[in-house]
Image 1 (cartoon, rainbow, N blue to C red):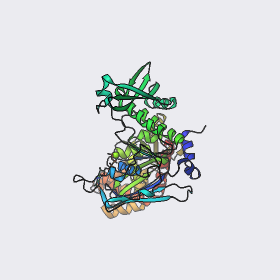
Image 2 (image 1 turned 90 degrees about the horizontal axis):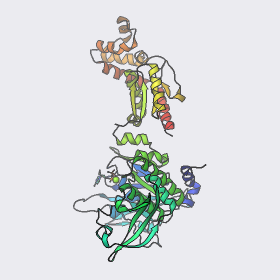
Image 3 (image 1 turned 60 degrees about the vertical axis):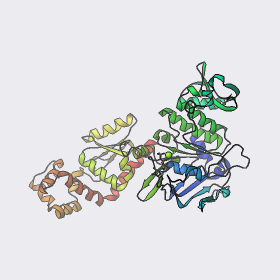
Image 4 (image 1 turned 180 degrees about the vertical axis):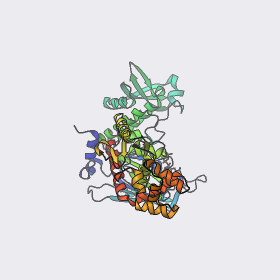
Length: 487
Ligand SMILES: Nc1ncnc2c1ncn2[C@@H]1O[C@H](COP(=O)(O)OP(=O)(O)OP(=O)(O)O)[C@@H](O)[C@H]1O
Ligand SMILES: [Mg+2]
């Protein structure tokens, strides 16, 4: 049976895309907004999930996304978003945007090889380009989509005693079942009840469950927010554009997961395009790789990393404190060697791995296999003389003996230690009669009048750089293994 994820991917293939999603957004280039000098975002899926740390520029991007389309000519009671709505200039905020700020939107056309491009830019103090945009309903669902009526002293609260009940809008049972699955509560019915007090009118959400009914004034915050968001996604015209700001807000973990599944489902049925911002690795893990993007502000400007994994996100958002990839090695020397090999081959992977010393060769293998049994992403990297078993997640260092032996017998390392510390490694090995390779580094450090860590670091750096191709190959295999294991 085809899953919703597969169906959506199928609907979004080059040949099917325009028929299903119309002139959807394919690329956005942002220049000069809130310190974002040049940001390029390529859209690869109907759902684009933008993650990143606070202040990365997620909202800036999606706010501009919500200004991408002209108001449909047939629209009534609908207000489109303009750039000026999101970037007010005032004495408190003199330069949220540069004088040459602009956004270039690329839209799908009936010929998938040619996009339609429209640039919205500032001419004097006004913005030009809006008229060339295609038409579409766009909804920006920010944090105010659901503010509990009790907090804003709505008429259903202050007029409670004399509230008049008007017409009722029942939600489709299918939508109710979706909401029930997300929140994890078994609703019999959900509806919006029209209410009025004097000359003022409003709507209030009502849920029936376990034989009793309650209005949104007595709902949980997550429940209310999901109700309002789903209602908009379901009652808007098909092929609308939705921007959802941090939809995980106030949802527990499994509700976040179910909500992500629901978004996939609603796109399959109603062909919306969705952009969401998120800090939730749970939501991200539920979306396909082509949806997931990470924004980072770096010294070289703002970067977008496509197809980020949920693990990478957790590591990026926790500043490296959460590391979901676990690697076991035998001892500290092996740990330093692997760390250096990853650093020079794949700097981003280094942030995601926790490398642990397991003790000996058997313990390394057992620890990795045990942790994988309990659902962790764990592998082992053993010394070069033991060999690998990649299908089991057991890797091995280049070389054919213990790391200390291969490092300190390498001619480049010997030359470096001679030049830096005037050490003759071969002679010192004979002189000190070293039989246990675990003692080599300490002996050399003593002879060099320095500490063990220094000799170990410079020697490993030298050895890894002399064997870079083999180490890069090992790290690539490890990274591929983790990605496959994650699905
Ligand atoms: N005038 C400005 N010049 C340079 N940078 C600015 C300016 N105004 C705002 N910023 C930057 O923009 C950031 C806010 O951007 P944005 O709201 O898009 O971030 P975000 O990724 O959505 O963050 P959050 O996760 O907190 O919602 C600020 O933290 C600041 O670093
Ligand atoms: Mg934000």
